[in-house]
Length: 92
Image (cartoon, rainbow, N blue to C red; front, side, top):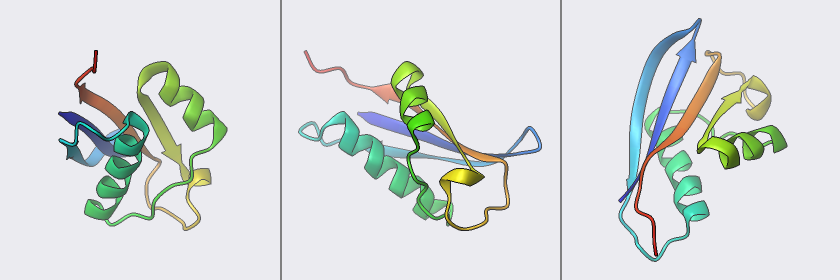
């Protein structure tokens, strides 16, 4: 089971959140993250953000990143969208 938690923050307050799940054992971790992000954005009625170099580096370090206004093409009414892996089955 792979679960990705998406949270919208504004003025240091959690506005809303949702969790995307993926049970496909054949999918790569990258595919699960990208599909999870798309699912989160769809559920929260958001455009899908662009992965900047900063986001990639943050996510590689700690399985967590924040998408700020510069990652979105459209104006968004919040400070940032944060995604974080909260459950991941490791394949041996």
